[in-house]
Image (cartoon, rainbow, N blue to C red):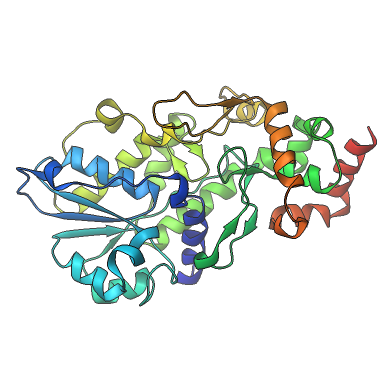
Length: 343
């Protein structure tokens, strides 16, 4: 896989972790009091924030700093400034990031300035949530314009396609069934998703063949397509520390820190999809709650009604989605939506 393709995937994953609804975790000076071990910096998105937290747990003598890639320009100005900051750390771990986030270049350009940089993969795995898509303009990170949904920035492709085909929320709801999912490829997503994840991980020199096998044995290992569960984050952090010669305490992240990304959006595994993997499925959508509040839970009818209401207020030209456009241009798939409209 080319570096350009890996960067494209990193860009896509970044778009699912926009800073407007993912509060950054940062190590404060007081948190590092008494930590005199090797200094660690971690660069990336919300997954990397979890990796940094896990490292602070597993390497209790080391100060750890998390650098949110979405704010690199604001905090460091230029890639040279970021490189100068990283010179003060003994170990630097980063996910891929594309050009446009900070003047001076992308993660490859940073690696040229800072050869000690160690890459780790962004875990994107849609098999459990194959209906999830973005809606809007993803072309330019600097001017990224994503359409909001009841679930932050995550949308249902079926919900959007139903709206664009002229279906009501009630008519769209009839499409959430096994035969439709099978026709859309939702029930056959495992193998291609595994291949893509392994290819992306191998491309940054961090093969995940063993880890994916272990994660799959625990059932679903994703909250949404780009938010892994806590044990996935912990495994990546532990391996990065070990491969860098740092001793990792033999503790489980969830036991000490919980699962941070579970506090964000949780997309359900639709029952026909869950049946394929021997899991429990539902149509209960969990939003990211305000601090101290219980999250709002949408059932399928409410989720579809609210999604359609959002779409109805938008300029139709803003409702771009490559997958939906391909569906509506394919006669046999467009017929599914036409049949639902006909009743």
